[in-house]
Image (cartoon, rainbow, N blue to C red; front, side, top):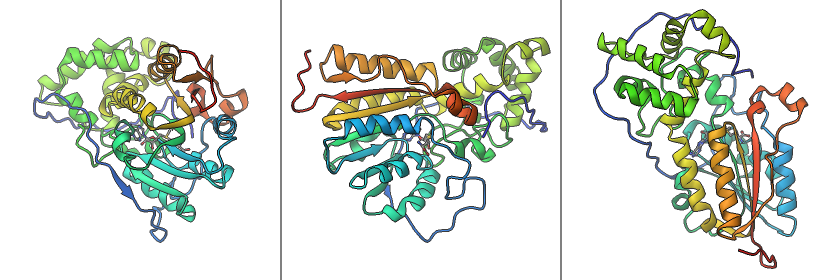
Length: 358
Ligand SMILES: C[S@@+](CC[C@H](N)C(=O)[O-])C[C@H]1O[C@@H](n2cnc3c(N)ncnc32)[C@H](O)[C@@H]1O
């Protein structure tokens, strides 16, 4: 599926609304186990319960790191921290026939679909609804694990369904919450309630949007008139309306791409959750545990890189397996647009017989 970089106006009518003045708070997720129901019927849409059109990014590279890291473990215990449509989990169940896998996601719809698909392996696979930033609680009393994999960001399913509000190419409510049942504020609420300077900071810091102040000022202008964007199409039109044509042409890619990315990261507190997850990982890792993380923008990759380096150099917890990030090959980038920005990094915690100096 092609997502970023295509110029496709939404062409929708405007309908703005102003909401109460409250600052946005970070998301709070509950943690519970989703049973994989074999008999429920998938929705008749693009994703369904199957993997149609979904190609897991850098899958063979992820499996290579796991194969090497788990070579001495007869029944590995693996956590797929971002289950999504279950592409990684499915491949790991096949690759490691003795493995027990726990798939975590904060999106109830992802759990329902992947859980349903992987129910065949019910005894070896469990889907757990949780924020990975709250992993220690979700995995409490389950012991330690031999491998963790994370494929950060949003899934194709989330992007391709207009009503989730993630896509600047599909009209729908400006929601963007990965967990629509949680109490995080929607993107529409953030736009309606956040101070104009803070909005500009969000667009700049999380989207590296050079026109952040101009776009935030336009939103403020609408709010003074008692209006605020409520749909993805309205936000796209607002952004297009405040940037002159030549500026839009120079932006490379869709003019709303960076603002959408920034809002998504903010709404879901993606960087805060990533930091929290990495704080908790060492306590959940068994000896020799392998951690593989695929990220899609520099802010995430920087967190992963620095944390792995600190685990190795300052804390002596293990070794970084990737001096440089692993990138997808030309062929994968051709085939799968989403993979173009992917970077994989891997780390191995010290094993029983390792001699790693602090
Ligand atoms: C890129 S997709 C994963 C795709 C998956 N590897 C596959 O092959 O189908 C990322 C998934 O991670 C989930 N996710 C992102 N941040 C999360 C978090 N903090 N806690 C739990 N799940 C999260 C999203 O809801 C989404 O379903």
